[in-house]
Amino acid sequence: MRLLRAELLKLRTTPRTVVGLILPLLAIVVLGAVGNITGDHDASTVVGDILEVVGFASVIALILGVLIVTWEFRHNTIAGTFMVEPRRERVLGAKTAAAMLTGALLAVIAVALALSIAYVWIGGDPGVSFDVSGRAARLVAAAALWGAIGVGVGAIVRGQALAIVLSFIWILIVEPLVVGLYDTVGRYLPGQVLDELAGGAGGDNAHIATGAAVALSFAYVAAIVGVGAALTVRRDVT
Amino acid sequence: MIEVTSLSKRFGETLAVDNLSFRVEPARVTGFLGPNGAGKTTTMRSVLGLVRPTSGSATVLGRPFRNLDEPARRVGAVLEATAFHPGRSGRNHLRVLATEAGIPGERVEEVLALVELTDAGKRRAGGYSLGMRQRLALAAALLGDPDVLVLDEPANGLDPAGVRWLRDLLRQLAERGRTIFVSSHILSEVEVIADEIVIIHDGKFVASGTTQELVARASGGVRVRSPDVARLRELLAARGAQVADADGSLLVSGMPQEAIGELAAANGVVLHELATERASLEQAFFELTEGKA
Image (cartoon, rainbow over all chains, first blue to last red):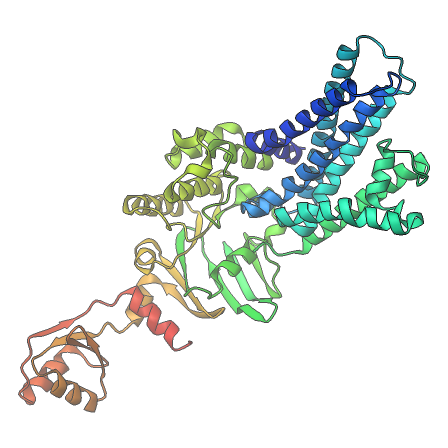
């Protein structure tokens, strides 16, 4: 517990980094929401479209997860952390929990902002045809899991820039390529599965059942964080 | 107490530490000397559980570091001066470590005062001078009021007043029974600060003992100044003394001062100076490590 408190304190005491991540998220949510409302919109789907933008919270959660691990290597604080708690798997567990909490919080803020804009601008209930709170919960869960994946990737790669670049290459290039070429395999890749969990894009026929998406999402997170933890415990801190 | 037993560590092709054994006793300041790349940092990191030995062991207070209960209250360490997030204030850096270790917040203020950073504590640590960074690192090491202190080059970047302050602090801690293990490349500093010294080279043990012992083992040499340097050098060499040039005079070892004077007189060589140089740790160090290079 004190390790988790310390991880959250680390985040709170680096205001520049955290604000630097939250501001773009808020900006994108506002711009996306306003863009959706002012454009040609169907009143029954506009709330769903606006919530779509909240998916960006997952990207920020991923980056934050990576940072929570990699900045300790970048700034040489990892030795101090491991001397206070030599059971390194616990340190990584606390980091995973902190990233999940922060990722979820970011998504909650983004959802609240998006919905406020939608309801205030449109004025009253636009006649939503889907379960808003269900969709919001999926977005929050996805952001939390992306935060955990960030910690796992950060622990495996250790280099800050490299970890972030590799993550984006995977999400923006590798997965879309595999999905485009071999959809039957592609739909089971981590990014696609988590997108499905978040109540993602839809429209194409690459869907897998929600239950399977949830199970696979947790399996991926456990595997990536597990590999990160195993490597962290075994590696030398030089 | 720190005990290193037959410790070896291989990084790929490089054998950084080679079958090294020594002990660091409590209530003493023990200096850890060796040229750059001798394996000091790897040894210290093995002691601190950060590096896994290839073979052999390193224990602190009788246990491997990773098996210590509440390690922050047993062992404090300074490894790198710049080991903090630059955006975090000095005080917050210590608060984070205190929270991790379960150490109360008041202790943060105590150690800040101890290293004279109370006023600078609220500023971003990224803006600290090297000396302030060293003091912040030392504050972090002292946070748990540990029994054992492991300091890798703690005097780096301190001004002369800071070095004196560090020396006094370490001496006080040693007098209170703490085990202090300090590496440094500043030999003159170690000579003043350390009661005991462990010397390594190329990852191997070279020598250990009290500072006085090691200094005594170094032949100090005799400085000889003469208008007829060339002749004197021949005479000395013929008697088997080692002769080195030193700014126009000769530095002679392997022959006592009196014998040199008598030799010069017997051969009618004029001497302008004949003085025994005090042996320094620096000489001891170079003599001990040279043979191993």
